[in-house]
Length: 400
Image (cartoon, rainbow, N blue to C red; front, top):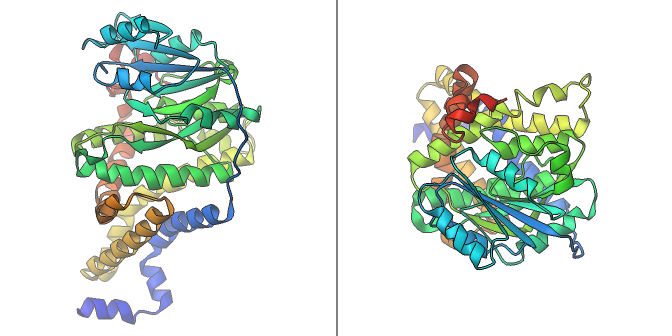
């Protein structure tokens, strides 16, 4: 109780000094999100009819490939089996015989999702190409909802809104359901409104075929979707977000599987935005533009500097106030939980998930931030992406 009384007795200047990390990194994200969502009103776009192709590349997705294909309402559906060994190809052949798959391609050995997608791209005929993961299901009307954004000829990519398909499987999936609603849905609405969209999700996204071919398709990267998005932005194209185009994807059901996934995702913060793109923030770069520099700096500030600064803050706090640090960190947790509740209301998260919001806040700050720190340092020091199983060993020499 003494610690609580001490906390309540502090003046605003002292509180700001003690909570500098939260004020510098956490609070701005919430404030910017609320302001942008409140001010920017999304306009309903008129329907647009364009020819469409969908590429589904999968490896050992025998249990999910049928549901994925049956959910896609595109003029042309291409499925590329990336050397599966679980019987997926037999399901693909059956879908082809039923007329649901227009072109089925089988690679004799696993070559990588990137290679499979690029092979599928060569067979596409539609003006707009949807890249869909084999474990993702599109909601009815998702394709039609994404097309109007391509009325602007400078738009090369449109990210669909992702929801968690296996939400009720575990506490880990419930955490991700809230994360997808706040970090992805709301975060991308904010990025779209400001013109700062840094990513078209690899699980479900639409692209202008001519733009894909102009930039040479997908590059060999552990996060190929981030690399492709930034390559399109670098070529002068716009990236949009279509909240009405909804896809449901399966997420890791255990903390171990989630950690493995995030090691790969977080490594891309170094491989894509630092190694590939950071030079473009310089006005001397031939690819410099103010908006692109803001995209890169936004990712670097909130996704790289923020987690790396957290241990510094904790050490600083302990060295200055000792055990009182636990009271301060508890206050931060309560404050962030309250903000996350507000964000869930803003994101229209289903009421069934509200009891798990404290878990979400706890996971984000106690589990996911340390995972990101380890991933960032592992990539900076050991270049772990060169050994990631997402890329087959015989293809890793192509990593940039």
